[in-house]
Image (cartoon, rainbow, N blue to C red; front, side):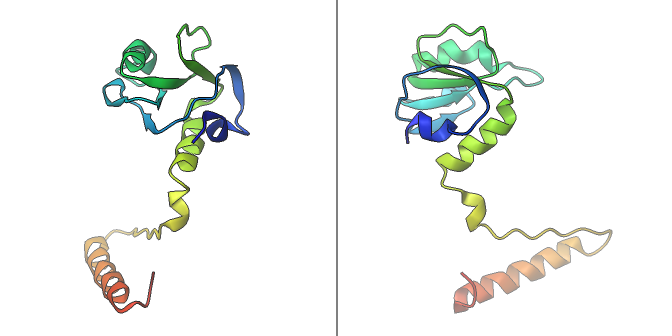
Length: 133
């Protein structure tokens, strides 16, 4: 998928842009392979921006960051809200998996484990019989 498809309609502050083909997404520079979008998130212990050079060495095609002073040899997309943009980009890249999921929440003081086992049994039996997709 082209980078331009992943970032369309986002509130991007700045782009050093060449529109590479993106074949993977990584948050850890050690997991970067050829044509990967590296997302440089700043966390409590580590700042992903410190690992951009490592991501480039491993084959990253582009980087998404909030650091507007970045200097890199690959396409850099400067986000004004990297966490929101990361959610949108990964959803697009993985073909909207949330639309294919059935999510059930169980709350309360007592009976959560029992209820979860009952639901698992009901859903797996219905899936076996073809009653649910």
